[in-house]
Amino acid sequence: MPWGCSPTSIDRQLAAHADAHIFTALPRSGRTRAARLLAEIGDCRAKFPTPESLACLAGAAPSTRRSGKLRAVTFRWACDKQLRDAVTDFAADSRHDNRSAADLYDRARARGHDHPHAVRFLARAWLFAIWHCWQQGTAYDPSRHHAPQRVARLFETDSRMQTETLAVSRKLDQKSRELAGDCAAESMIPGGFREAALLD
Picture (cartoon, rainbow, N blue to C red):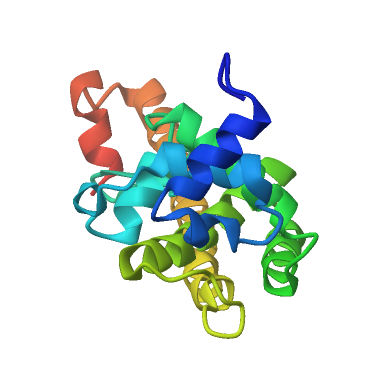
């Protein structure tokens, strides 16, 4: 809770905001959590032209890096930490009151992801739903908005990409060991060209 803000003043300010109905309709959002989400996301629609832009700023979308044939999908360190904390706090609790959210979380855990990683998957799904509701000015309705189910396929694709990245990384490691053995015996590949050789 912000310093000097009482629950009463938060309720009063939230009730006066035009977007309050969007955030208070979210499962397990409550008044304080809804106010926090609204404060962190804001009300400038142009700031987030796509749901992906909101997910990236919130640190809920993975960071993808490419170098030659290697593609790595990693945790996104560069983000708005306050927004990420607000979204993941909401997402982690939402699974106790929303069947789709619980299913998405459970599937992420079954694939071997730890709790924080599974919560980020869930947060990303919720941000897609929140973004659409926010852009349209409509309250979240579980019978109409099915973001967790729709985004689940996207997350499973991400998971497959991570598996493929790991497989490529292992192949490169194997090739590196083979080349290192050849170099140790004959010193035929100068050190500066080793990375280029690995990517042939």
